[in-house]
Image 1 (tube, rainbow over the protein chains, first blue to last red):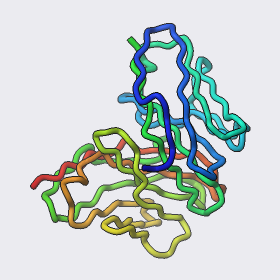
Image 2: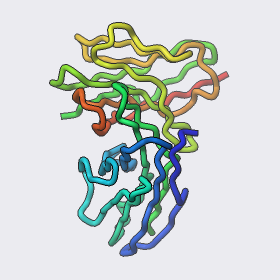
Image 3: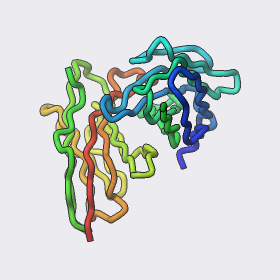
Length: 114
Length: 116
């Protein structure tokens, strides 16, 4: 158990819908990353938050947005869903106080868009 | 340009044997970090081992060791005494730069199958 929690574990929805994925980082970790894992694109970085502020953006679509709340949990919002958005979405957290700065991953949310 | 290359889509090994999973990387930074993660069929990503670009010794964590060859830009994972539970997908990843808090770049992964 990495200490990072993600809900829900599975999500099945229809095209055009909007969903929210939730992540709670490990205790003490200020940095949260979102990654998408799909068969054709592999593992891709989407967006990072640090202590409530957006830190970096990767290959995140405009239909996707995220935020980090004062209690440090983060939510990833996916809207106008398309079939190609079906993927495993991971949240990872790190403490950013050590040189290794290891990112620990949550169990993921498997999104299926029908 | 691809930053992390894992050329072995699948590897097969028998229990108790050692196996090496290949990873090459591309970066112009002098300071970077290299990671290996394991993804079992259940889907979670499990951190295995880390190697910093300035670390003089190869990293080891239990049965895992990292064969770091900086000049060749390779960071191969060696698993000694394979176990059935080692069957999984393995990802090599890199964090560029010296600053903590940078996102990881992943390779496409290698599927390891361990047989009895």
